Image 1 (cartoon, rainbow, N blue to C red):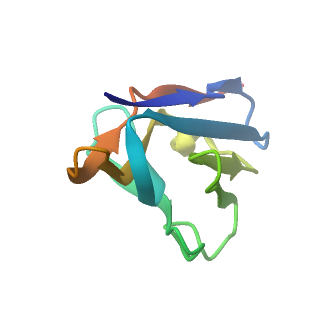
Image 2 (cartoon, rainbow, N blue to C red; image 1 turned 45 degrees about the vertical axis):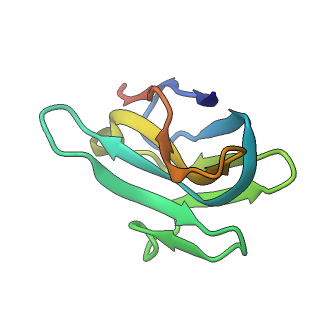
Length: 120
C-alpha cells in the first residue's frame, strides 16, 4: 500500500509564509515526478509546481518566484515553500507522486490535501 501524507497547512496573514511537506511511503520501488496542485474554493484544481527525479522544476508562479519546490529523493518527500502569500492563494493543496510499486505497477498517487488559508 502507498500513502502520501501532507503537512504544514494552516492560517497565515497576507504577506506571510508557509512551508508544505509531503512524504510518500509504502511498497515503493522508485519515485519519479512529484509536485503540488491546489483547488481554490469553487474552482478547478490547478497546477502549482512540479519537480522531476532529476530536480527539474516547473512552477505556475515562476515569474514572481513566490513558490519554491524541492525534493528529497532519499526520503521520498517533496516540499513547497510559499512566500508573500495572498488571499487568492487560499486553497486546498494536494501533493502527488508518480511512482513504481514493488509489484511493478506505476501510477500517480495523491495526498489527502491540506488547507491553506490566507486572511487577516
